[in-house]
Image (cartoon, rainbow, N blue to C red):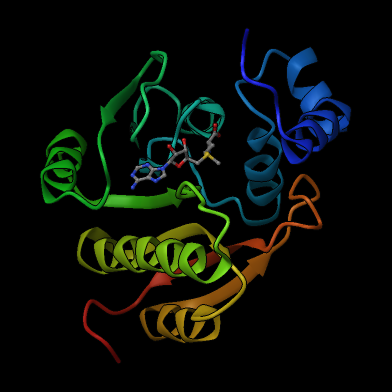
Length: 211
Ligand SMILES: C[S@@+](CC[C@H](N)C(=O)[O-])C[C@H]1O[C@@H](n2cnc3c(N)ncnc32)[C@H](O)[C@@H]1O
């Protein structure tokens, strides 16, 4: 007999199936409801332009990569990275690996073959249910993405990253402001109100060393 689901996983599944963005994503054949978050951010910021070189971190199952690839067109480059396997997407190089590993980061740099215009990160680490530990893990990953952006994003480039409100959030915003001309937060409509997540759009990198 399969193991019985807990009450909380029953509640999560019920809410997931009733979610209008899940239904809409399914009807439109999108890979995940995350599509609507990037679509809304793109409408407001126009951060992804045709011909750009873009990196998508925490990319599986691939809704952001499919959308970003459409915005870029065939002249640019898109590299998608995730711990999990992803189904192929035309004109997208997929790297399966842990972003924390230097070997994964080296593979990303090699695949992009040039200066990066935009880094997208929707990375969400697996949670343990222990709020403090989960926040620390998420913040450490966000720091790793920012450090990578500071080194590898071209001057004038943009970072769009999911970050969780909690310990370290204000300091993270401050760090972003020291490297980018303009820093804004977004809570897209498709981001669940009970989730602590928001998206930081760090526009126009001005610094490669702390200000
Ligand atoms: C919310 S999902 C991303 C959804 C995706 N943006 C889309 O449009 O389909 C978060 C992803 O982060 C990935 N992830 C978590 N930790 C990671 C790490 N250390 N390195 C790479 N990917 C990671 C997870 O495997 C998961 O697929």
